[in-house]
Amino acid sequence: MAYPSRPSLRSLLGASALALALVSGPALADTVFTKPLVDFAGRVSAGGPDRSPVHKGGKAVIAGENLIPGQTVTLMRGTRALNAEPITVDADGKFSFALDIDAEAETGLQPIAVITENPASADVVELKISPEIAVAGADRFSVTSEPVVRGLYQVKFSEGANAAFVTSAVGRPPVKESKLVKINAETLKIEAEVIPGTAPARPDGSDGGVFAVYGVDVDEANGNVWVTNTRQDTAAVYKQSDLSLVKQFEPGAVPHARDVVVDEANGRAYASATGTPEIRVFDTKTLEPLELITIQSQIRGEEFSTMALDIDEAGGKLVTVSLSTPEAAVVDLASGEVRVIALPGAKAASGVAYDAQEGLIFVASQATDNLLIVKAETGEVLHDVAVGAGPLNVAFEPVGRLAYVANRGAGTIAVVSPQGEIVANLDAGSLPNQLRADGKGNVWAVNKSRGENDEAGDRIWRITPAAQ
Image (cartoon, rainbow, N blue to C red; front, side):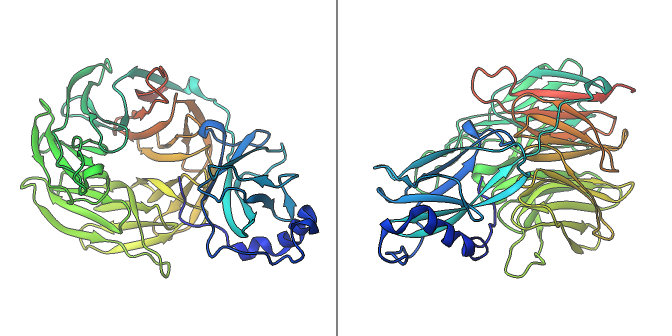
């Protein structure tokens, strides 16, 4: 994915210009100041083969598209050219370069300058070298898993229904394959499922598909299931008992809706509007929208983008994290006060969990491959834990007092103590996506598949410490 910010060219190219001159030689032109572009043409990406993580001692691919045919490309890391000879952009405006990563490489976001000639331009792409954490500690847990349906996104256990509710959606708009699924808590077999209704046409008049479901939470007080319809910028409510539709909110009710959490004690549902600084609020009894919550970034010129949500109902706190800025926020639900907390060491944060007992915030960040453990009261970062490639979501399990991190890129679930120790790293099949604690000692997780015949994907997992 594209991350919110990248290094400055000025900081990278001072010495690189000299190195490029040495690599290219005087044959290019009589002057180093050849014809430039106003802006860099095209897009360059860096990652592993077939979107796999990049590790030290492994392979990477740097590729470009929509460049100018015939341009030459030199890739610089500091003062060193990564390609011995300039790469020529092909007739389709593309190039691809395979790169060996040495065994001594440092993990993290490595800035690579992309310098073109004929005409001249420059850009920076970040190559992420991820930590590789060995699978270990499976003997400390009881893990049960079963296949469900295609395109799993989120899961939430309901004590009232003694079932787990799972959302699924396949493909990009117009999404036509989506289900809300009710799963037996003991057997992990499907008890019921429903296909969302037809969505209205898109703004351009094209097919709107269905009201595909993504985020999910349960409302035990009213016997409902809340879901988010990300593609239609809205949310919906279904009955736990038979999955009948209670209410479909109109498109636009929650822009790019991601997570939804329910505060049963106060009769409220909160949905994050990713790409905006907003959390939309609904009354769970009347199903009417209420005054929204807005979070102001403390970084000048930047905007907070709400992602995952977690709630402490007893303490009256709602916690979220920003995708676009290195920040978390704690909302006092009684007073409405919003406190923003800086997260040094986080980039593209997407997952958040809250430990009410110790007042700890757990933040999973995709771009920095880490879990931050932060003291909510002071904002102090207590621990910065490398957990594996692409941590997407995190859940805190209060009985065993452990955080569980879904590492989408690594295919693992890292189990981390509040002291920052990885106590286990569990194999979680293909693309772990989301997970939630049920308050009874179990963690429920879902993963996605890499294709229709991927037996390790689109599964639900129930994880319980073996001592219980």
